[in-house]
Image (cartoon, rainbow, N blue to C red):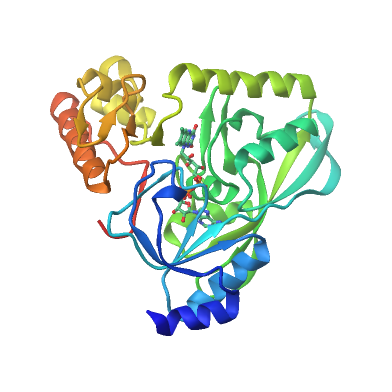
Length: 326
Ligand SMILES: Cc1cc2nc3c(=O)[nH]c(=O)nc-3n(C[C@H](O)[C@H](O)[C@H](O)COP(=O)(O)OP(=O)(O)OC[C@H]3O[C@@H](n4cnc5c(N)ncnc54)[C@H](O)[C@@H]3O)c2cc1C
């Protein structure tokens, strides 16, 4: 191990740590150690850390806000780079015909490490529409692109307003790609099948009434508070919702697409394994009561899957990303 920490520290300084416990960097508060761990404070530091890790043939895992992952109890082999880059700024403005109206389109650039909430507040304060419904979404811009994170009231996907992004590819190329590169779909982007690291993103946002945007943003937060468990350690929704076509084919009760509804009606609220339990508020949320392990969560996930399959004939797919060794 020491043979690797030395060149890492020579390149990146003594902020590189070995055997760093990762639970504290996740919203689940679960997970073993990273072999090597580095917090990148700027996008250039992030790109440099990816480059040196690749040069040393270390597997790389980019950690954003840690709000959609379950890290295994044995941790992550190779290098974990926690992206804390912070820059947000306006990159350009143009006038464009949208439908029948001429509107002001503003290009906002954000580092991938920027918390989505900080970016949303910036854009709403600037009177820019497109990200406002995501107020309250935990995590970073990079994680939101990876997952194409979404909100349903009103419906919006992060990918909808991406204009272009700067990436470092698995081969070490530093490139700028357009929105079409990402193949955004429900809970999906191309990043899930490449080794690209997002360094920064440009969003194309349309000028709109600031008060109206704040109203919608505030409604999102209120809805979250009313329907999701608060002040607990979780990774958000455990399972993906179904598509409308799946709900039709499987003939779910009331043709629901909601994984939470199926879990609730399979009697899973309050079920537990060790310190992991299913929220009584929202059945799609698994909560760590304090000392839950990744193994506990996996057992609970298996129990959910089995019960929903038996009761409704539906195979639920996980939304949470499992990372590392279990
Ligand atoms: C209370 C709660 C509420 C939530 N509500 C929602 C919701 O309304 N809608 C929704 O869609 N999700 C929701 N989530 C899930 C989660 O917040 C989102 O998926 C979020 O966008 C993940 O971002 P992150 O930075 O935390 O990613 P992480 O969990 O850190 O990482 C997720 C994946 O993204 C990759 N990644 C991160 N940064 C980069 C980068 N720069 N380049 C390449 N890959 C990268 C990681 O390697 C990992 O594979 C919720 C979670 C919680 C805990």
